[in-house]
Image (tube, rainbow over all chains, first blue to last red; front, side, top):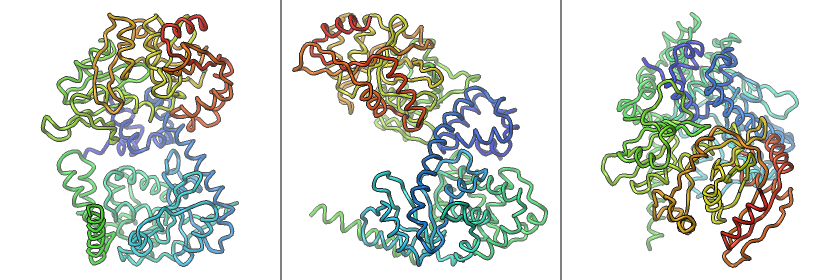
Length: 352
Length: 285
């Protein structure tokens, strides 16, 4: 199977460097820019000590991306510093998720990784208190319809996005790792139990295996198609870090206890195939026998990475499948009915 | 799909388009060594642009895209203005090598003039007039400052003229050739002037900044008036009109401060173009 240029490069930068034509580099730079991965390419090439061997144009583009990343990284840490005095008063754990957590832990995946908002996780029972603390720190919730608000709080996994009144910072306040409408019954208490404090900060971060589980859930139980390559690269980098710390057995135990073994098993199998990683024998055996293998779903992912009509077809099925995971069918029917009725009512009000 | 390429230092672009006229239309604006009928297989391009109709049918618009990023749609009559704006968007959105300011830049006798100004101030008109008087054009849109040495990097492209300025240039020099006059764009009527041969020949030669002039065309004002600009105001204005000042952070502040410290800044109000040009030449040369 022909892998996209970015996956081929992240799989083995040395091999890519040796075989790449000028046209391949042009494609790689183009794809990396579209997905905001140019700075991650620079980090990759430096980790693999091939930076000096790169064509000057590639170095130039990586440096463009790196400059932007440095600005983003400074902004992220500045925002976290601004949040500290407000959330240090919280008597409950406030966890950083995704990009902010990767940065706070200094993980390999954070090197050059861009972010669009800050993701925080608190226990659902503390949501109101946390929101009021953030309100006094300058964060507000834009107006929305009563149904949309109900959707966020009762069916999704996060509060409506909060924005800082002066700085415009976007903050996603989570109370779960996956939409409640998906009825996955995930053991959220395990995430809080796994978390550890960040030295000198009021924030905590989930363990590495829960960071992987979170990334796997959002890759495998969702409908979006445009970020598949980026998400796979995140997963591969997290995987490599888990391997280096011999945490794969822990990952599978945590995933099972949490109730998200399916996305973990299948993302590991995808990483093995796409990035040609050798899974440890015991892990390979467990995955080989796992009832959580979803061969069709993984094939849909692989099909979407190829150009052509098959990718569009696979994308359409992936979209429907993603919604099936995110919303139980009864919830989905009700949601579609309510949204259609509201849209129709608004249309009638405008035309009357 | 046929590929062609545009080599405008410091950026090179590979273009895929199903338009039967795009290449020949662009060939009226760019010289042969810059606009090439093929893509060089040994060259790594800074940007790849897709400029195609996404669905069949002659009335369907062209989509200007780089990678998965969509810029804008254009009907066949507005192919060139949208291409030029799209190229500006690629550079202003993604390049982080130079501190970029929305400004025209010209050079004479080794000294460069920077003209930052909002739309409607007469920046492009003034830029075109100075080029026709023998100044070397570095850019009519983007001032690129090299953080390594503070020098100005040319990015030579056709001068974009809008609305009344087209006739001003035409009446200033009867034999001047203006291309692709396109009415009813979102900026009104736009047309293009080819950069001078000198500008293309020295498209790789940087220039040292010497003056910053803020032009302001005011039909009811004095024929021409020049004021000194306070340096602090100049720094702030340049920062506000930079595409990537925030990305450069402290380095950007230091670069702009040095630039303003080492140059003379003026505000130039005018209603009479000839008198203004005479005064400008006298003031600067």
